[in-house]
Length: 209
Image (cartoon, rainbow, N blue to C red; front, side):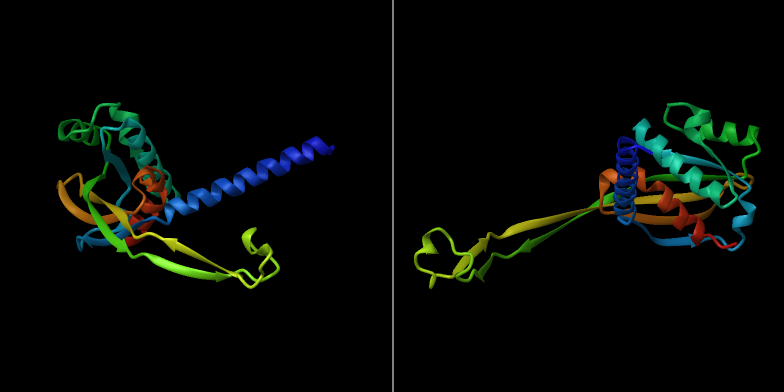
């Protein structure tokens, strides 16, 4: 292998590592907080699931549903993303009901926005003095090394954290009953759609066999 090809291979490897690190950072910001499950529900009963993300943003809907679909199929659950069968229009009860009854779907999993909470914390002013020493003096202290400290002040500011909640519900098609519901939160609003795969794994893991 010549030198340009080696450099190209190393560059691609580095990009893959950086991408994996970035995705891991996003995924860690979304987590399942609590859930409820009907006694009669078992994961093995979820033979064919329609995944529905209730958002008017078609890009977020596609990313979210695809993330759920991949995670469920990894666990042996046949899943269908609503965007692939219902189109770009916002899913509604009539369109979902018509599809699931005509295609042998056993369960419908619906995720939707559950609100936001904003937390504000005042971080007080801080004053710190650092010893610089005679070896690395400032320009003014070059001629007088006894002046070997520097004081830095950070002004007070307000730290704002926005938490976005999602509610995910699972319905049994035959009875139309709610059989599982859980809430999840994300500290990175823009990464929710990209965190869908990780969130789906948490939800599937929380459903008893």
